[in-house]
Image (cartoon, rainbow, N blue to C red; front, side):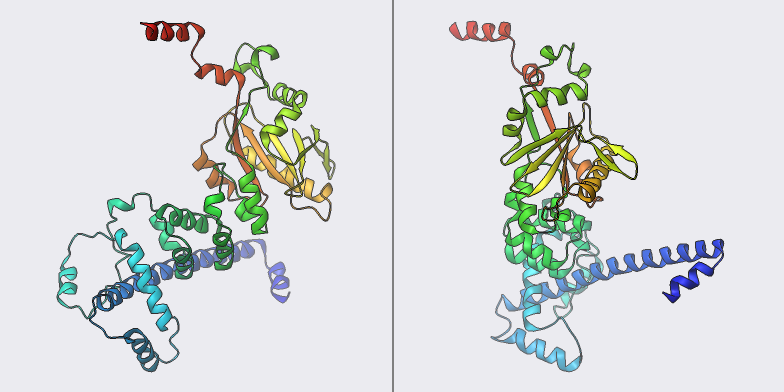
Length: 383
């Protein structure tokens, strides 16, 4: 409180200086923490390689790792993180990820090879990545802690699954315990293809998994017929016309969308501080015990859609949601979306949201052969 009071008494230009210096300090500390993590991972990788090369080939006798750990504690009192169990984890870390290191021989490499008693603590920091590791987000790999890495290694076997958890841990800034819960829930095998932030924004792991499983990345709204609406082509179809087509076929839409949905209303009136909003479609889902907003967009995804949807969700949770219900969920339905771009942006929001695309009957017809083309194929086969 005293610190806040002192800050209020400062002139404007001095408060600006405090903010600028504070931001620089925090950014520097963040960069330093990242560098420390990189160095630590590289050290553990180097130690893991050293232990692997000596223990797996029978150079050391039984109980060697335990004796090494005990002696390290004697020579470096207060040393933490180098118990025999930790040293064995370092060995596993190296053995599971050794394929990512593929450096061209350098002078100090040759020196290292001639002296097997030295440990290369820069194995991960100075590295030309192996072609095998093209799909590994290397900067993300170096950005998560050794504890996170070991949780992932201990509970997964497939490289794609490990890369998934590394990427999601980095994106969502999961602590070790949140990661452990999601590994136990087998998030990788439950994930849908729709870009979303459910694992980050939904507090309980169980409900996050439910939401991830529930929504698809693309929906076929084949009950929306461009010709019946009266438009010349898909570009002429207005969002409100799509909305009305859904309202008229709400049972079909709910069956397409998933189970346990109840329709609440369209253009649902929300008001906060005299500002009025009208989300396109509002549902309630019994399994999630949450309101679900669906915003319809005629064209391609735009970043502004996420801000609009986030505002709707915040007002819903403030004014409409019951105390026993979970936070409201929002889905944007648009014609096209770059999944990687959406996934990157959506992690910046705290409200549970996802972005899916949809196709209409007209879209389906465009990819189907015409009657004339079908007849031609049948004639050719007849010959």
